[in-house]
Image (cartoon, rainbow, N blue to C red; front, side, top):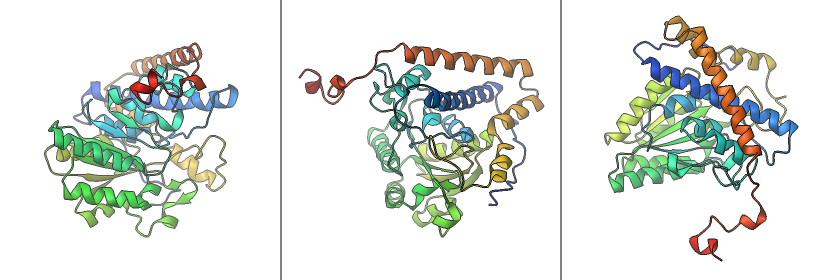
Length: 337
């Protein structure tokens, strides 16, 4: 794929319920606004740690997770805010986690790269590249063992596909026909390394064929296309057909991490991809199909902005986590030591 000149067509939302589409629009806005607020807060206030934004990739997280059941499992990456938002993790608790507060989703102990909420099936975000892949595979095995009918989804980047654990997980998942969907968020850069410089086979979705796993490449900036592909994969997994590998081609319009300069990218390339913003594409499709009015969509934007400000206020007014908390969430015995 020519990174500087993407060939992306209009979104086809025909036959999709308006309620579903508007819900996805809201979730993508929440994911975008959460990260935009973080960018500002990290630069202007005493927010600890670091962060990795996925601005521009919202359609992948929201499209995939919208195709799941609430009790299905998800594992994420160091760039995982959007997956948590899409899975329904509390915005208040996520923001409190960014401020290292006891009301955070990980009690202030995890921060940006280690968000989780087991009650939502969000099994964790991981700073180690590819670390969530075997965990999702294990979760899928547990679902089979318990006969729960659940599906597990693992999100990872293009760089993770060169890790040995990717191949080990796909092999065992195929062998045992586990109900797992592997989702590669191909944003075309592993930090500053392009796919064509790191991978001998750049059609990443074809890698599953070595393990008898079907693969599909989808426009990762088209939330409807992602939703349909993920729905097919989830249904296949749930019905006993085994795993699927989805390659969602997208683009992160910000740098790799908090203060990273994107000197390795052509500014024209970045600007070209901004023209395929997944939120604006869905908005245009909704308006074009008469599924929503400008006023309705603007109202959702206002509601999301208000919710984000409320989350910031909640976080700032919450008690800080401290060194004395270090044993509280390890074991029951430690909690009473």
